[in-house]
Image (cartoon, rainbow, N blue to C red; front, top):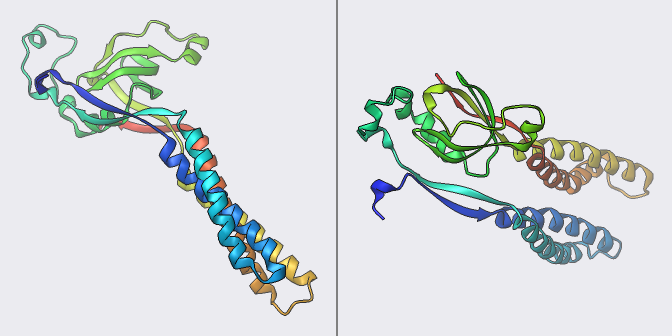
Length: 246
């Protein structure tokens, strides 16, 4: 098949890899903390922590991979730049004239991010649309499918076959924020761990200071918050802008 006939190439991938890493790290850290707690009374916390990290990390990686394999999405590899093609049909179609918008780099970036199974919202001169597009190319969003939740709200159940980019003002997609979730979770659990460590030192008869207890508690508990916060951030979806007309 010649490249002149190819408009887009996507690779179908699963979330097994990322979820396997998340499961290995989060569950492994929990296992390391549990092993250290069990081995601390007999001064074998380091060995037990290493064993817990390996065993629980392997289990978490396997379970995370199995869970992530259920999520499939498309990774774009190629989007044809059709702005240089001169077609006879374009000369008689006043509804879709060639414009500088097609050559905009922001349009190509948006095409690379919008997959066939990615929910998006588009706003422009046509009104608004919420759903999916089988093809996202420089000429526009084609073969549109309305979101079933949008249909329940009373929106148009028969969307147009194509919306050209010169009609679009803004496009948003559903996305998460694992980094923000990890930061919030790490800070929250770190403070909680520090308070628990301070309380444990204050109630014990050991020689450790309250500051050392707070530091140790934060070091052990904060990674758990980072892992859980990252997972929560990935799960909580919000609308993220992928295209804005300048």
